[in-house]
View 1 (spheres, one colour):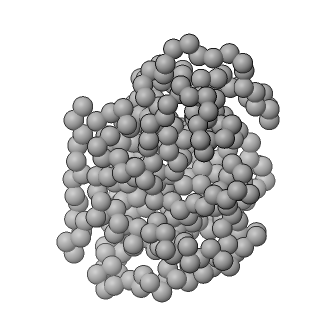
View 2 (cartoon, helix red, strand yellow):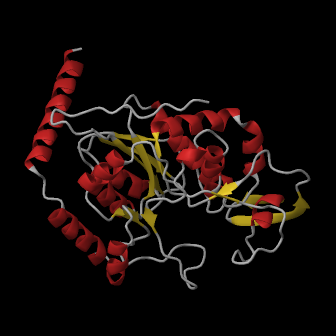
View 3 (cartoon, one colour):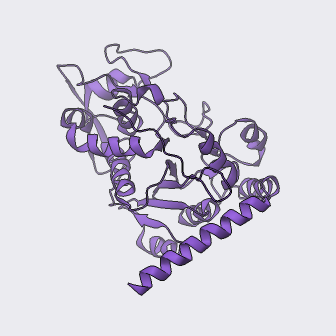
Length: 330
């Protein structure tokens, strides 16, 4: 398989234009998600939103109202994604499909949750991707499914997660006592759920989701499949040399945070600033809105638009207005 490299598109000022599509997984805290979307909105930016099928209807209608006036938003087919189940991976795949189907051809696709937040301004995010056009930012390392006990994994070893059969009945999760007989169809790779991928990688994932039936059948009865599906597909392909091995989202795990990352607050701001990441998770505006306010303030101070950036924004706006006028004329 030959992978196409990025074809640079230049602005009138000579800069490479980078169009970013944010793929967001949402199931609650919709007011905070709306704040995230407004913060990320910029010329050339789009959004694919997956709203969990179990989301509260009134809150969802209010959320849609908060997004009125923002352009570039589409919704993925909804899945009820219970934590740990295959449905979480399916929600991501439905979002990937929706992103690839969009007529706009974005250069970079970034998967976030509704409780993530950017650590830098949109201009610096675009600058980073402009300097790294062909890298796939995703964690990926191989798993051994033969060892029942692995230091550091606790009870949720790869053996437990993928050699055992897991079923979800309502809110209940059961690991059945039977074991799979054969090995997986390809080496399973593990990583964080969150990534930032190029369009060729997204197209490959969407195609493989349908054509690689053996892997799909194997993972359907696994546990925490969302952490392995995309890394496994990419590392078993010609994209593997482009995989960075790390993602761009900062998270902190503590002995008391359990299976979820620590909820970040204002006291974590120095660590966030020193992380070198573009995004972080997770935040809860109802517990600590000050940290989000401070991130907004720092971003606004550090990214005062240059005259060239302002000209580029006007150019993008004029292109959008011309496109809208042509559509209305048709």
